[in-house]
Amino acid sequence: MINKKVFLTLLLFCFTVKANVIKSELIKQLGYYDEQIYCLAEAVVFESISEPQEGRFAVAYVVKNRVKTNPKFYGKTYCDVVRKKHQFSYQTLNKKDWLKKNIKTKNDFRKLSDCVKIAIIVDRQNKTKIAARYFMNEKIAVKTASFKKMKMLKKIGNHNFY
Image (cartoon, rainbow, N blue to C red; front, side, top):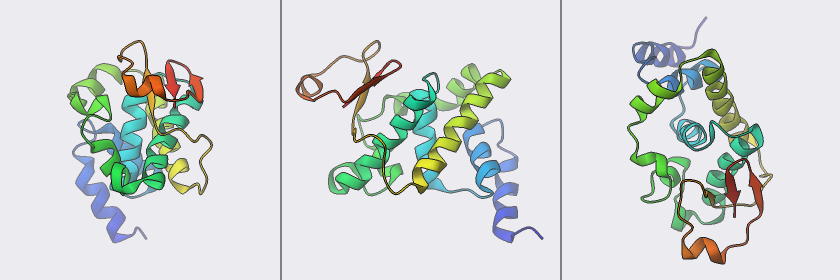
């Protein structure tokens, strides 16, 4: 027998599958909707969907590390962290349009599904695999003075992690 909470959550979102494929995939994988994991998954999708899997994990770890290391500054939850002004460039995008333009093929959807799975895995881990709290893509971002002072920990795909 299906859990009432699961059923109502699925019913609520079944009408918006096309509008928000990330939420739909999260519900499919978890069996219910969790706003915090959704925020983490959203960051992984928008910031690193075109990156190798290691880069996707690293982006998720950055968000988690911010919550764990300095919640007063970054925020106490994943949603606080990713919605903080001037921290994640994707927050300025029209997300629905971006998804419609960029998630068209089975391979695109597989990558999105992988990003959601990574968010779930990272959320459940006690330790993070990379200590970074910042990342940037030098191809699209200007290296500010604050980044110049930081020690780069690792380069994965197009992202540098600090």
